[in-house]
Image 1 (tube, rainbow, N blue to C red):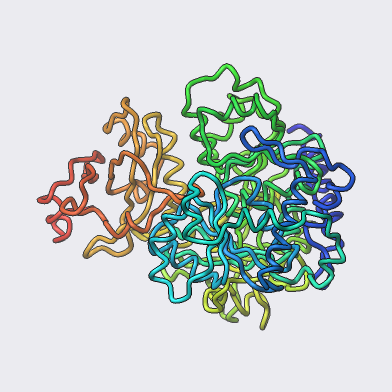
Image 2 (cartoon, one colour):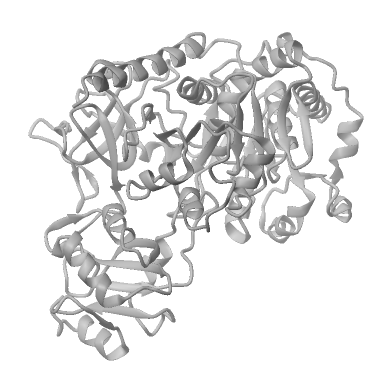
Amino acid sequence: MNLLQPLRREAVFVSAILRTLNLTHRVGPDVNLTIADWIERWATVRPDAPAILHEDRIVSYRELDEGANRYARWAASQGIQKGDVVGLLMENRPEYVMAWLGMMKNGSIAALINTHLLGAPLGHSVALANSKHLILHDRLAPHLREVLPSLDTKPLLWVTGDEAPEEKQHGEDLDAALAAQSGAFMGADARKHITCRDKALYIYTSGTTGMPKAANISHMRFLHIMSAFQGAVNAGPNDRMYDVLPLYHSSGGICALGPVFLGGGSLVVREKFSATSFWSDCTRYKPTLFQYIGELCRYLLNTPHDPKERDHTLRIAIGNGLRPEIWPRFKNRFQIPHIMEFYGATEGNVGMINYDGQVGAIGRVPWYARQIQKVRLVHYDVEKQEPVRGPDGLCIETENGEAGEAIGKIDQNTARARFDGYTKKEDTEKKVLRNVFAKDDLWFRTGDLMRRDRHGYFYFVDRTGDSFRWKGENVSTSQVAEAISSFSGIEEANVYGVTVPGWEGKAGMAALVTSKGFVLTDFAAHLEKNLPSYARPVFLRFRAAIAATSTFKQRKVELQKEGFDPAVISDPLYARNDAGQYEKLNPELFTRITEGKVQL
């Protein structure tokens, strides 16, 4: 081993933590501090510096602040006060940031509604916000108007944009209302009634297992997330963050913005990701930072070689969900100097960053930082879907190398440990674990299984609801997916468990997207070599594409409900036989399986 490696590892970790602590030491529940303080600072000392780049537009810090001031004054003119909610349904563009920043200056709460939702989920999200006013991008208006009749209380619509001007006939003209407001400097005195404990945003969960929930984001948590990412990348005025993730989500709308807005740099925002335009954008905008979701990295790897793919200015890619099997290929092919994987949830208090780029790790908490970052792994019963408790009724912490559910100590007085919960009390209570290591202590449940190594690196294992038992063994869907995805003919794999009548537990099933060179017999041999028998999928389903949320999380619930019945599934289905090969799953074989006549 290189003797300098441990020293470098600790130096990188300590430096990042110290930068983060330096940014957050002033952040407390009763402190008058919001991100608007930083934006106004840059608008004063660097007014003409670019704040946001979007398509052919360059919005300076002065223009960003002036736009936010108009939104704040518009809100006040409508009687919107501290604590009131304003819905925001708008696609990625500079005005999106101006809108929520203006609401923060006003003291109101912006509910960031997912622009990809349709029908009942969209109506549910609007109703959950319970807002009297909703800012609406004209392009999205038809989708919203479809669900308005189903709402008990309908918000007043304020339409903005010039792509569908006729939509302003169905609501108030926000652009005209904003033009009538002053963009003059407001200053911190206008926000002296706002403290860090106040709510800043509602951010919705992705709804992979049901209807979205609205998570409360306080100014304290908002600043802590931003500070953690700035502490990691140490951005300066010359840095630019390339952000193609939705601004309504915490990754694209808070994490990516933190380094550049705290450091005085620039945000390069695009409406949606394009693998074919990625390197052209890097040549055009010259970003130094890239906020990724793991699937984006896979999409880039699947594109043909581009002459520009190594001619870029990127120094750091930071994000989550980059699978270990493609991590080195992504880094080496595109010559990205540093990759930082992180772990965190919009609503949770468990967060960590893999500062030094250890392949496969989602973060690190060394032994000497355990009292600062109170993240613990506890033994988890996959069958009962709950943590294991000992004879004393308390949870049991795992040893190095053992999988357990990640939990975080709740402390409402510190930014890093605070849990603000959801808009619904019952949703909040489900995420709180009580009497964990001592009587009456409170811990946040992540719902994620992880393992930790002796150096304090954490590795993702699976979602608690995604792991299942088969043949008396715990099966991790993510680890099975990794093994499947290492086969050259696989483009994407979604692994889940399905119920089989007469069998305990759940049988493994994989929905696959394959390339033209895929050979089923070779694939079966690959699984036999790389997975234990109980973890090899019993059923295969071949699809043209894998359904995902707008933040690229695979959807499993619908696939699990559909099961493996060829009478209701039009996709090609296969079942593994005694010889370890996959045979066509027809109605006759399905009947034999469900009647217990086939040994799985």
